[in-house]
Length: 162
Length: 162
Image (cartoon, rainbow over all chains, first blue to last red; front, side):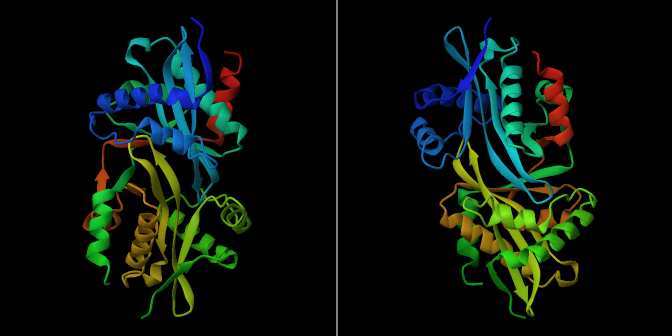
């Protein structure tokens, strides 16, 4: 089976969104996806694209995607973040995920970054083993903190007069 | 004591670097900082700044800083990442950290993001409590995976013929 990895185009975004939703279900957050394919087109293909996206094509179908963007480390300088690496369930175990991962590492390396980073769920043992087998370090020490839209608004209204 | 929060200037970067190094020592990684103040100037003040930085000034001295940049969520759209929030040890407990945090939340909110995110070490209980008290959710489920420069080069040389 031939695996082609190519840069995503605007017209791929509806399939990319399907993959994003498939991953959200797998990650037990089916209602977390509020983004629409028009948003992905607007954010990824304007004058200042907010991300780079690549799709895997097998048998003329989009079977996977990876999406990432630059970040910055105050220890290392410019870095890259891999936000998503998704292969549709029926096509797993065929090397598509590895091909996408390899493409993203090469893409990032060409940018000269000193680090590539991403997040993985602690119960996703298959993914953790895949990353470790490919030389990644998975830290248990760092925790991710988040304020969502409602937490941001609450914080601001609570503290506006301080 | 008056706390002034203002946008960092090029000439502040040598003090910002001192704060970065102070945090790296606190985070038990004193040798992890390879960046120089000239790098911070180049990366933060060019045509395409890679980050936004704010400093806290108290008694005419820079006593703290925060630094962040845009990220992208395939669930929510544009987000902001708070990379560092640092107050020098002698000036802690005076509300400087809160003033910087509040400034960054307001700054991010004005950009219309649906999420603000950052990382915190699991043994840094004071920081975790501070964030939780201000409405943040601290996840124990997500792990951070990283490939450093040497892991990137090793991966590429191992897989270049696949």
